[in-house]
Amino acid sequence: MGATEQQLQYLRQLVDGANRIAVLTGAGMSTESGIPDFRSANGLWSKDMSLAEAISIDYFRRDPAGFWRVFRDIFRIKLVGGYQPNAGHRYLAALEADGKEVTILTQNIDGLHGRAGNRRVLELHGTLLTASCPDCRAPHGLDYVQQHELPLCRRCGAALKPDVVLYGEAVPLIDVAFQAALNADLLLVMGSSLEVSPVNLIPVEAAQAGIPCALINYTPTRFDALFDLCVQGGIGETCGRLSAAS
Ligand code: NAD
Ligand code: ZN
Image (cartoon, rainbow, N blue to C red; front, side, top):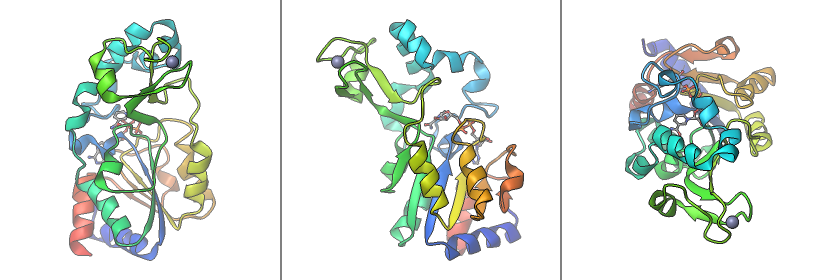
């Protein structure tokens, strides 16, 4: 597994030739930072199939205390500050530093793209780093959330909701994300199983619009046929080889 020399050369050609690059990233982007993804063999998903129900807006409304217990367990919220961007995040930050207009469309909620230095980051599924009051909208930081088993709004006392898009909620930034992909000269998809809707339709629309699309992912996805290039390999390794040879 891993990119062939020919694939690497083609990928480098696509990146070099593009000024505006949209990058759709998923949980696979952060596994090399030590954050497990949902669908790989070691991912969180495979341990308990009821997780989709557990991190749903319905469960939050029904039982906020139970929700927060499970949510903390799944996302290891206490550890979130300890994770560092990896070679893949740094590669995307370097593209921007080199003068490309890079827009990151991420499904991740770990904040690592911003920490690596990318400035245009759309966190499509929200962020783990804050929580807000569903009633009065008052925002609360991670420090406060970590101090309380069931974090309550300091202003009105309602149970806080993490600023993460839960199953059953709409994706507020989805239109902006489609726009960014459709305005790009190249769409890169990295570390996503492309199983979560509506985000997985972004490459579908981009490919239909004739925008070159490339995928770096360990495992095949059901949309592989849409891509001009599919690299089945690790993100860190592929990005390392890309930057070494350029
Ligand atoms: P996913 O878990 O469904 O898929 C991840 C994909 O990345 C898999 O196909 C896997 O083969 C691949 N992969 C894993 N490590 C890789 C690596 N180092 N190099 C190349 N490929 C690698 O992830 P998804 O598509 O993002 O959907 C999961 C949902 O879970 C998202 O909605 C996201 O919000 C959430 N989530 C986020 C985080 C995070 O913020 N880091 C972690 C887990 C889940
Ligand atoms: Zn409130």
